Image 1 (cartoon, rainbow, N blue to C red):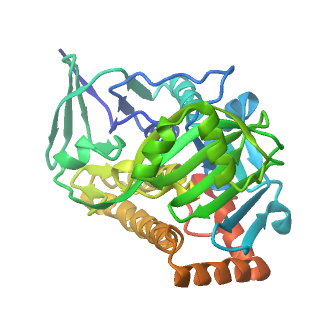
Image 2 (image 1 turned 180 degrees about the horizontal axis):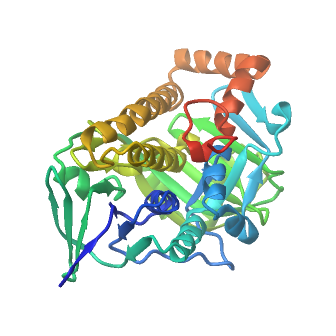
Length: 405
């Protein structure tokens, strides 16, 4: 069987891998994407329990790749404010888009919808070949090239191999890149819930001793629930019947939206932290969860992955424009230096929030309540948080900037 020649081979066809593929194709690269499983399709008649809080920076990336309009036409849920408060006190903080002259802080979007839009975009690009569903049979990386043999016997050859294959990345393992990580001792409960009161386009988060509880507004008036709880408590919640779970959620949310009257598609997943010791190896780069996994309390996981993809597009494009080898180690190191520090900073911030809020220590309770109250009163601090949320700060890739370069 003939060997298919391409520029970049991406293992993993999720949101991050497909974003990278479309961005590279638009920059003139030939790209192959290999995905082992056929993903579930978005269903217009039902809301998925796995959603992302898409920042304005991520929205700009998706818009410039020609997929945001496709997504927005189907179903997005803008949120105009974020309200966060602590279970152990009365102080809280509200971040309002209107305070910065913004229409919203971001959008809640189902992961399946984003993925469907990206797959549709891939189908329109002649520069992308999608191999799905098919397993990877063998990886072979040398100083000059990358070879991938698929489980069905087909063979690919390129100059760059990208691992977009999740937290258990085979690409990372093959490259011999180690990871630092720890288990949070929590599980995340997700569901779509119906509440007595309308959410008012406000994303709400209550910090409980066992972990944060978030109610994210959906377009149909319901909320997407993300409830992080200690493993034993999470198992109890998962095992509850519908009336028990609704009562437990109503109490845990302080009935901020009245009674929770129904929930659908309840599921749970373990929470852990992971960071690759390096984002690159000779001819290999890692993006998204293959490089970093953070606590979901701020909903930044997918956004960080999309920024990874956009940054790698910039780095590879600039290398080729300057006549350099896009797969050269010096080129890939530019990407690693760009993204690793920002991602490590976000991980540290999430770990700090987890340490400060996920406990019933009275001293930490005082600190966090004073901090929340002060943040709510200090306009410059609130403005800084909002600017980060909407993507106006940091060293952003071209696709994510207000002005596209």
